[in-house]
Length: 223
Image 1 (cartoon, rainbow, N blue to C red):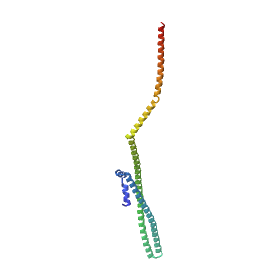
Image 2 (tube, rainbow, N blue to C red; image 1 turned 90 degrees about the vertical axis):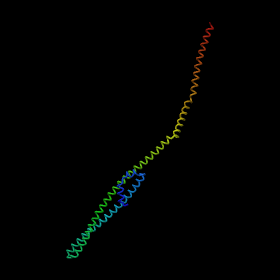
Image 3 (cartoon, helix red, strand yellow; image 1 turned 30 degrees about the vertical axis):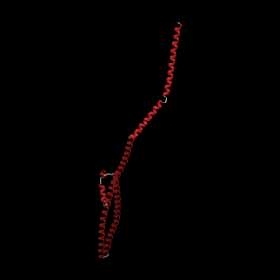
């Protein structure tokens, strides 16, 4: 496939449509970018070659114009000197030089048009290449995001698995037991003190009641 055929295929291609149909869009866009870059290099090389040919043709054109002018001057000189035959030969050389000038001027026009076409094609392909590169960056970002999302989902599933949840339940039960043990550390001590004071208070009441009974009993005996 020639450079211009490849260029037209690339420029006329619908990147989005091609990527939508591709099994591996990222791989396809990389291949497209490589093809565009290679074609761009060839276009620039061809453009440079055409510009060089244009410069060379311009030098030939100047030389042809100088020859035509010089043979015109020689024809006039020969005629002034009375050498009509030399004047005729000089005019024949001038005609050949003038025809060469016309041919080279036509060549210059064609080369100039070709250079402009190359420049236009290069600009168009560079724009297409930039579009492809932006698309590639988006695909890479989507790929990275998808990979991160997939890892996150795996982590979530792992956290919610029965084994992990069972470990959390066991840990929670252990903490509950530790808290209960902490509450019971001073339970016995507090209860014994309360019981001791209660016993003291009860004994005093009993003694007071006994004393009252003694006093009452003594009062009856004295009667």
